[in-house]
Amino acid sequence: MARGLLAKSGHEATADWSAIAGAGWPGLEAPDEFDGAGATFAELAVVLEEIGRAAARTAFPSVAVLGVGALGLLAASPQRDRLLRECVAGDALPVAVLPGTWGPGTDTCAAVAGVGAGGRAGPVASAGFTLGAAADGLLCGTAEFVCDATVGDRLLIPVRAADGAVVIAVVEARAKGLAVEAEPVVDATRVFGRVVADRVAVAPEAVLRFAGDGAAGLRRLYDRAGTAIACDSLGLSAAVLDATVEYVRVREQFGRPVGSFQAVQHACADMLVQVSVARQLVTAAVRAEVARAPDASVAASMAKAYATEVAVRVAGKAMQLHGGIGYTWESGMHVYLKRATLNRSLFGTPSAHRAELARRFRRG
Image (cartoon, rainbow, N blue to C red; front, side, top):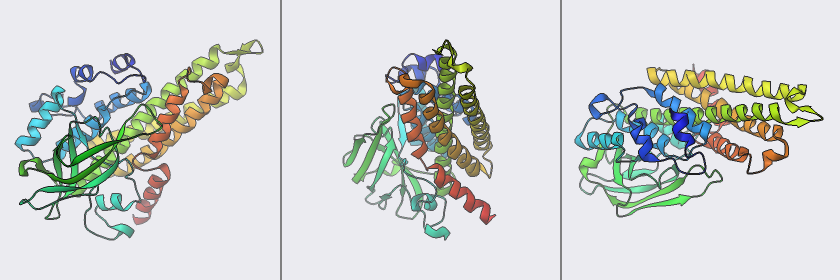
């Protein structure tokens, strides 16, 4: 069903949000009392993979993975419950302000995990935003390369409150003092924005606290983002592999299909092996997220590092196997290669994730 819905728009037009909301996708993880499906991240992963397969233009990952994901980690309140219901109904697009430049090894990511630079215990930082005391409630800060920041109508901004707690400030996209500027990227299937808050007034009821530890909540959102990108990369890798196998089956050279040549067969076989391994790692990361396993961060890093790197290699090899047509816009390979390249950089590069995994294994 997801594949059929996304095929209607493809990667050349933005997917119809009313159709996505009508299919119930935004409410897949939302509990029944909010008119959601009460499903898990596993069902969400199916849609995310199909979005990657179609190279679809949609804010669904930002809304469902991070927006709804953040709301689900917050303590119950009238503001949170109302926003969650509106999102499930398709009437609101809450976007979590998590910079795409976050990644293992950066001071910001280390602080989110609960440690300071160099691995020492330190104060918890957020995405660069601070919130004044309840008396003034003024929000200040900046975040770069926030996915779908220009699309969301509500921004869920992680901030450090005056008491040091990590909270979420719900801010209207058109609030006074808030600027959201588009940041162009080579991948035309996604949009990013720079969020700047200059003394934005935030009402006390719009400051939502996590049900548990705020730093742990942000870390889980970061892991969800990495796993979602891995799902997207897996989907686009599978699509590129299928298109390549079909092309070499019908393309003839020297009077025979090019797929009959051993070198081409070996190249396709190598692509299949890499995609198969990526699928195993992504499946493990999704299961860990669903179970909230203690090693969920490890599984997310492994999937993000491998699946995104494989996607770039597979897309590059596909362009070669398509021959001269692979380098034309008519083939569509360039769309997948650009998307795969961006996926590799978002929320930590493969080398950064591998370095983080090495540090974890050394510690224990």
